[in-house]
Amino acid sequence: MAAPRFSPVSPVESVRYYESPQFVPSGWSPGRPGEIEGRQPAGERLGYQGPDQGYIITLAKRAESRVRVTPGEHVEDALRGCSLIALRRASLFGRAPSVHDLNLALSLWGFLSDNPPADLVAVRKELFSGVGNAVHHYKEGRAIADLVPESTLRLSPETVATQFATSWRALTGYAQ
Image 1 (cartoon, helix red, strand yellow):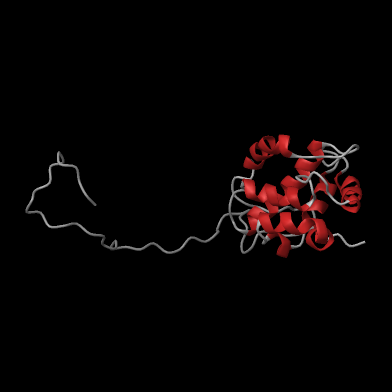
Image 2 (spheres, rainbow, N blue to C red; image 1 turned 90 degrees about the horizontal axis):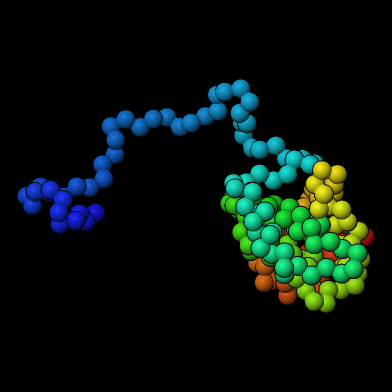
């Protein structure tokens, strides 16, 4: 690494390079009570764990003006349901949520479209109704996040945005 001219280094001193330490500590393992050994538990209503998940609140506030809802729908319901999908997508990749995760979820359910399919709107009115209230509709929000197949979450937001109008049932996992 280069050093500034004012640093006191002798011109005859040999060049420094990385050397391994003499002692290498053993790897960490969980040893305290309450630590999870192995994988994070998975199951109904447990969610999807990932780093810095609170950032989705900031992303949702920024996206609020872009969300398009029909009469009978609420922006808060759309944002919370899609935020849960975005958190699940981010956790698949082991990272914090990004705007692309939220855009994928909003596009998937047609909340960024001016003219979403009528049958999609009817389904999302039923699924997303009241989900904005996390206290009373936690289970419904988790169901929305669990509904979307992992294969859809691994797609790019652009792919989902172009395919949702014709194949939204396969993309969302909604079959009825």
